Amino acid sequence: MMPTGSAGKEIPEEEYRTVFREMFENVGLPAKKLDEIELNYTLSIW
Image 1 (cartoon, rainbow, N blue to C red):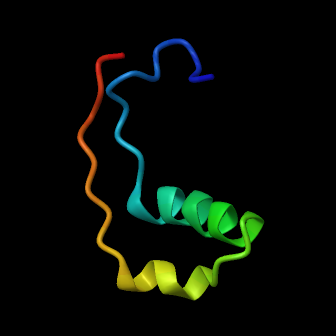
Image 2: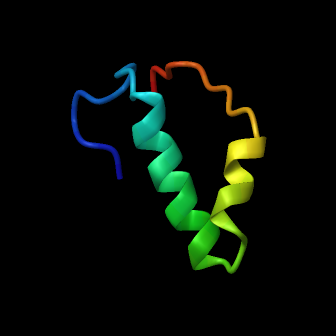
Image 3: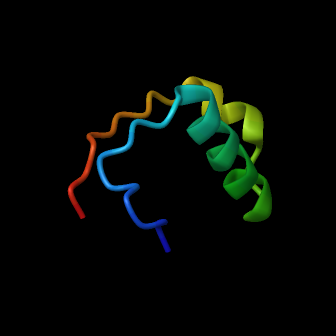
């Protein structure tokens, strides 16, 4: 769950890449493959 007031907050690229690396590792995917992927996101108003 997102903390109150976090909607629209910009997250530094290295921070979200760290989270994705952990998710890759948790499901058995090689985390270094993440460096080959371009991640695009937009700020949300949710």
